[in-house]
Length: 164
Image (cartoon, rainbow, N blue to C red; front, top):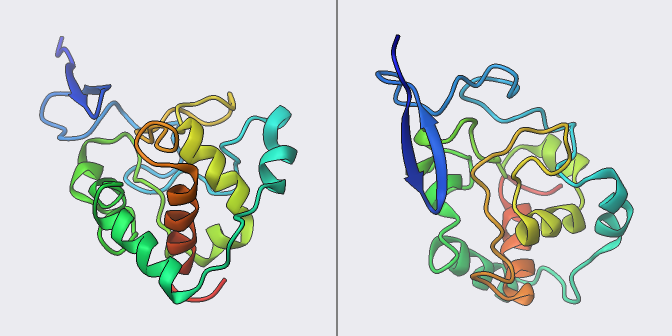
């Protein structure tokens, strides 16, 4: 019987099957090698209304978007998983069980509010809702970024792929 290998990445243990080059079998994760079903919220039901109500205290000006991009590509390290263009194809995505969020997907921008996205930046996406399996998304805001910087990154992510 072939045994899986454990891999530590960004503080998360991933289960890799020998020869697969990918984390544990993604069956049940939505589309293997693709985004998880974007219709299923990451925020637990009990917290969803409060999360949806959150909004940044500033607008997506060109200056704010430039700052968000600099954080995304720099100290936020978002590009490692989400890719430099935000398509979910960063170098680290190869070892995650599902593809990280594709921020250029216009359907995602129609379904998820900035507040829900902030909830994920604060709490990660580690399967808290009970409906969505854990992903490699760690809590970033409060750990590595301030809430203000989180909103800047978020507004930048929402600008990717054109208007909402």
